[in-house]
Image (cartoon, rainbow, N blue to C red; front, side, top):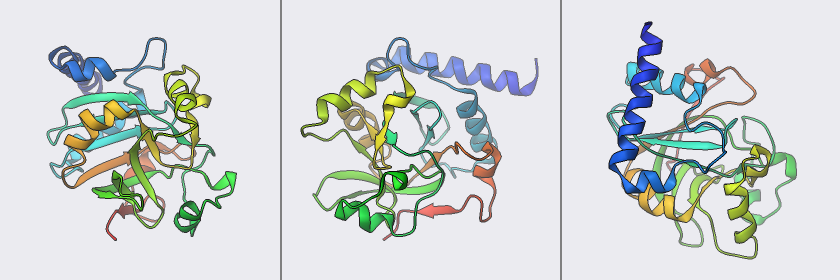
Length: 223
């Protein structure tokens, strides 16, 4: 058995053991019929992160845009939980300059509603409404946050539960998770200090995520 196959098997076994040991994980694993909880792209990214110690011992998360799934790991690379997410309406791996300000003003064009790819040094914070969130890129108003109350809440809950990936491409660009998942996983793991969030590209090769250069800049949430 090759090293890659052994790594993938270890990852899958660890995920199953974590799910069996934690009611929280069982409650928030993918809904029946949705895409695989652990995609090949997520496995490949996880393997590189752990072997290269790219996360520097911090808790981290991997967002697979092609599967609209978020996976959370502890500082030792052990899987904690996964969940379907809502992502930006428009395909693409880059934020448009000035999009953060337009997002706050509610003047974003549909084609600007992308979820940018990259390696983000994240930190907890609050938005202008005082809601606790996890900032990925403050200038671009890019964050992980819970599903918000409002007229569209029920429709978005249905989108989160949908098996159609296209249904989960609806946000302004942020990574939107179920309320219960945010409060039981995101807040205690990523919301207590620094972390790293890897958003996998959908228009570029996966390896560009780890290239230290213009193709894959390291973004920080620092204001």
